[in-house]
Image 1 (cartoon, rainbow, N blue to C red):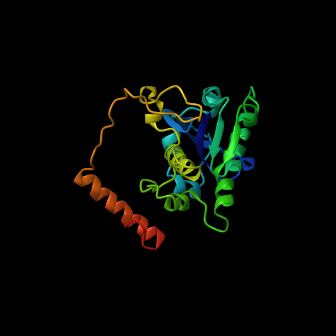
Image 2 (image 1 turned 90 degrees about the vertical axis):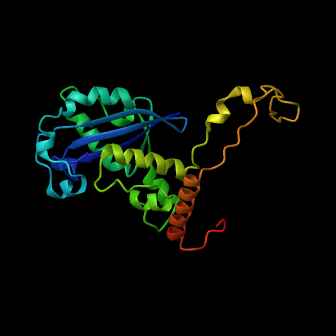
Image 3 (image 1 turned 180 degrees about the vertical axis):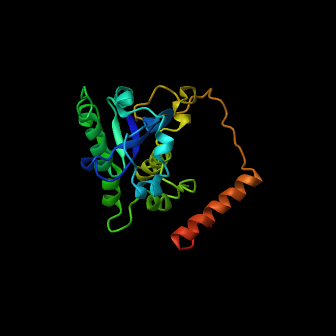
Length: 235
């Protein structure tokens, strides 16, 4: 499965009032593994950015003056996301802006649903945590994800954080590196359907934690304790 975790920043809140996208940030995940294949671009909106929006993301018109227009990056963006499932927090906002931008092109490229399916993590979070705050900061706190670098919103940073949140919400990373090393496993199964270790396998290495790692672990447990408000059973 190829998923693209996506976020945008904009000049304001309503594309129907002429507001436009100024930043797109995407990270690629295949089979629940981040690949490092990012798509990130700043865009000149050819209009003023609302003061309220600048307070949120810190991006100014002066910074965007020499950046490409949406029409210049549209095809590259579509090529990148084509065939994927988009993972977006509050998807109607970002999809609404992207569809609006696509429709404004001299040679329209259709709409996002022509290329992708969409999973809205805000809807998922509300189903999992009804009646609670489910913005990205609240989810980071709930799942113990470090978002200390998020002083201002940024599309690429928020996509990277959302990827961690999504993996935590849906059961963590499921495909560990060790399971891909077939030389540790016997390819044959017995009649009981049990996969057995090969008799000539390499011995597993036992690595003890360093004193620094133990200290970091203790500090992380204290952070969890502060968030939970109760004594952790494994402390």
